[in-house]
Length: 440
Image 1 (tube, one colour):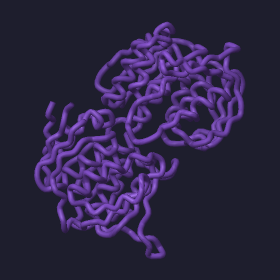
Image 2 (cartoon, rainbow, N blue to C red; image 1 turned 30 degrees about the horizontal axis):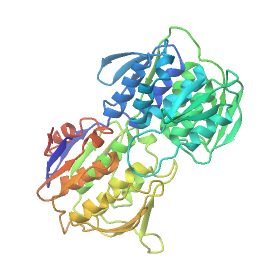
Image 3 (tube, rainbow, N blue to C red; image 1 turned 135 degrees about the horizontal axis):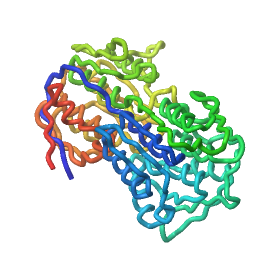
Image 4 (tube, one colour; image 1 turned 180 degrees about the vertical axis):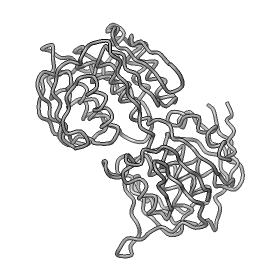
């Protein structure tokens, strides 16, 4: 495993551009399976999860052309259905969380697909019931293949049928998967309690370019008029949004190191409640066109609730705060002035990395797997360097920010987890003045 060696205590300065959004990239790349037309996608993040998904599509028979860094053309004209039913396909999918979204296009377009339990972060139970129930609602049947350790989904009558469904949770990947399957169904499908994140909106935008009709984009009720994509040789073009998780991570990085940085081209209108959530921690932000300027501050004072009680920051479905930023906000709060309750509702193992922060001198009370109370040091006490390991993508970047503010030299192992979600993070942060050495 590789590791980072971080010399903490350095001030940062300059400009940084966020990468393309990982979560959107996984969706729109899978969506290229819906059409045989060439689809060119730009601002693709060159991270391991995305590269592994592209490699999977190539194995499936998708023609992939890399024009330059971050710009690819996909053409799914000749899918190898024998490979899609193979042991190797199931094995690759089981190791990659984003692969779950190839199931919807395959089931809708070709009538069958294997659905292995997907891999990814070890952050607690991540059920796929919403996906499978959605496919069943559309007319698919399933059986468990104990040999491949995967569900085999098939369409008995040759084509899925549109229907009304109410999702049991506003799952982003579930909404995307069902949406792509329903696009190929006969008739109209209504998905209520659908996720409405900007990434889902972007997926809908790409699908409309393919020729599919979708009503209710940006709402929690999507109506898809099933059919087939318009088939010709015209190229479809799509650009991925900046990654809102990276934007939030860079805001937190500036605060915990008391640095002044500018985050460029953030697509501010698609950040939702993220800037305001960091302002609640006392961080000043300035919107400058489509950039965010974070000035250096000596102190960050956490707000209190209107009744004077401790501030509560919790995740919620969009337009609420994304759970992917709570780890970063928790680390930032350790050096703010005041106290805050961080409530991670979705995943029961995502806060366990706080043990490493406590070893560094942070004052954190882990109430249960979902809640932690942070008592800020107001930079009066500097975190101590520590030897740590990254348990998942978001905890990994949070530990990196902690190490950048700590006194001394820290080591973070298992950085392959960080590489899954952050492109060349050490190189980009070093250009701002950080000291991060990658040890292979």
